Image 1: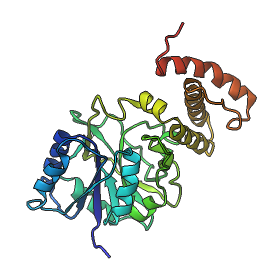
Image 2 (image 1 turned 90 degrees about the horizontal axis):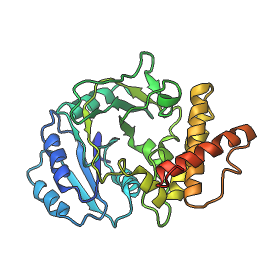
Image 3 (image 1 turned 90 degrees about the vertical axis):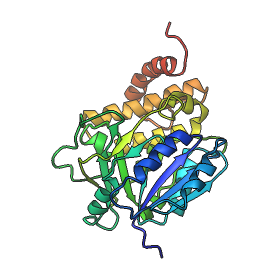
Image 4 (image 1 turned 30 degrees about the horizontal axis):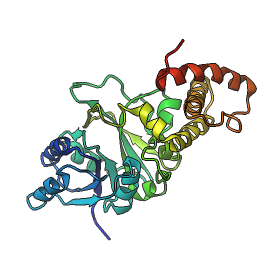
Length: 298
């Protein structure tokens, strides 16, 4: 059995320059007690040769796996299955870590119970301080609590217990290469809690060709997986009460209905039984479908 505490996992696709920046941040860490697991989602650039050139000199073990181009979620499933670390953090190829990242994680791991993970806010590339902090009292939370209990819509770095993560693989839909991350993350409920820390060490940058920048195009290209994630988001919100939960339910339903309209699929029958809510969602969905998916609003 491996005694590796932490796997830093990176899915990548044709990101040779960005991956080199991430590697530079990893060799600058104050603690090298981790493995770096790279799953290449079928890159056509020189990623493989570059990674191979790092292997001998790297102060930490690097493992490189190449799969046919299948999507980030498939790479993530493979990374979780192959990880040697007891804990697991995904660091995207266009992001990087501050020098104290691994040291911070390994310190905070020592206070965790068996199935728990860690949650940290991210910093954007040129951000010098956090705009939003986790509030006092948010010590151990479910992932959905961020939005539902505390109204936080922020980017987070998540450290998973690897065994727990393996219970919640991303669903894979034949012919689709995208699925929103919430399709798996809404499944993490107590006792699979996350201990909150307000010390950021993860820097993120969104590239023009990245998944986040092309979210609506990805929805259209992978409607089945996207609907699955939105349904999970709606069902997760139903566990909470109040105006915030209602807004989240409506937002998820509008996402489902507008996508259904865009791809000419059946509407919300069977998902929402409240007639008033269904009547509210329909006109909003028409407007959103036009704005998100390219049709001009008349």
